[in-house]
Structures are given as C-alpha cells and as structure tokens.
Image: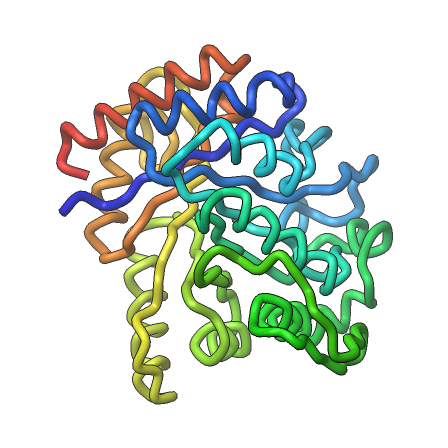
Length: 309
C-alpha cells in the first residue's frame, strides 16, 4: 500500500488567503493528497536576535514575514474539502489559552466530520513567547502537558472538570465534541519529549532531515515505547520542507528535499522506506502564487506515485 501524502496549505504573504486556501485545498484533494496541513509563526523579529530554530546564525526565511493564522486557514479549508484530513504541523501550544484551543479544535473537527489532527509543539522562539505565550518560555513543557490534559478533558464526556496551573473548569457541559477520536501528535527533540510522546500522545511528527537520521529516531522511539509498555501503535507524519529549484542540484552538500522534482521524489522514496505512515510535503515557499503551487503539487504527487512512493 502506498504511503499517504499530504500538502501544506498556502499561508505565506504571496497568497490571497481567503481565495487561495479553499482553491488549493480543493485542488489538492482532487489530485489525490490525503491530508492538508498548516504551521504556525506569529511574528518576524527584526532584527532577529535568535537564529531560526534557536540555531545561532541561522537566518529566518523571508517567507516568515507574514504567515496566516493556522486555525483560520484550516477553517477556510473545511468546507472546500470532503475527504482530506486537516492537520496542524505544528501549533505552538503555549501560545494558546488551553481551554480555548481545545474548543476550537473540537469545533473544527465537528465541522469537518472528524478530519482534524492536532500536531502540537512547545516552540523555540523567545520573541514569540514574549509577545503571545500564556507562561514563560522556561515553563513550556509544563504548559504543553496542560494543553494535552485540557484537550483530553474538553473532548471527553460531560461534565468536564479540570484543575491545573493555568486552567480551572468547574463541572460543565462543553460542546461541540469532536466527531470522533481527535489524535494528538508531537515532535520529539529531546529524551523528555520522547517520553511525553510515548506516554501521552497518539503519534509522532518528525521533520525530514535525512533518511538515516529519521531511521535512527524511529528506532529510538520504538525501543522507548517497548520499554515503557506502550501497546498502541504510534501514528507517524513526517514533515518535509522542500527547496524546489526547478533543476537538479549538483554537489555533495545538497540538503534533503532540495533540487528538482526528481530529487525531491528520490528523497521521499528514501524517507518512506523508513516506515512512517504519512509524509507532509510543504511546497508553498517555492511558488509565486496559487496557480503555480497547484501545478507544482500535482507534478510532485504524480512523480511520487509513479516512483512507487
């Protein structure tokens, strides 16, 4: 059975969000993409005092100067599609009030007929935390835990009751409920994050940084799951951020998913062989407008399927 393929929805400044999100979502579903995804960036610090992903000296991409709200973007995609799953990769959980986030995700799931996937993370940008977080950066792990707890409570049976550091819910009826089980997926970049994933989440959201590295991460995750007695299978969605150049990228320093469509598909094939269930392909940064994004997405999808991905 072929691996599931998903597409990143257009959120960047070159797109007309109200027009292009439904258009691209509809076209992607018709092409065959089985899921549609959004990511979260809330600001672009200028000058940036912290490198991208907290890597010293790594510049923020210019595309991040304007990124549409992920939950608004998903709402625009709901009524334009019928089958595709609608996911977040990822929401920076501590930038959201836990109870309100749980209700919004439940409402989106109910509106879509049970198609939402909640990818949550703890974030890395100190500037975003200063502007929008509900607690200091140093407490991000605890806030992520509370967001997970509140979501499980709000999505569960009434009466909902919860007491935490940020959230108090007196016994209450809280609706609408998700249409079905609403999975929570997490990245895992540290031993503590791996344990959280194994113990508390439905699945894993790694980033495609090379097939060998992915295979090693997958092995560690499976070993930890066995050690901690997890019996439920771990869902997996790999996120790949492409750099499509339109021609073959020559040189040994080529990064994964950089170059021509053929090279991107080659990398998709190598990463799929590791055993992940689904790959999210984000192409929006390489397109000038929605028409170009739709054409590129269709080309990549056809080439991937023809190559057996």
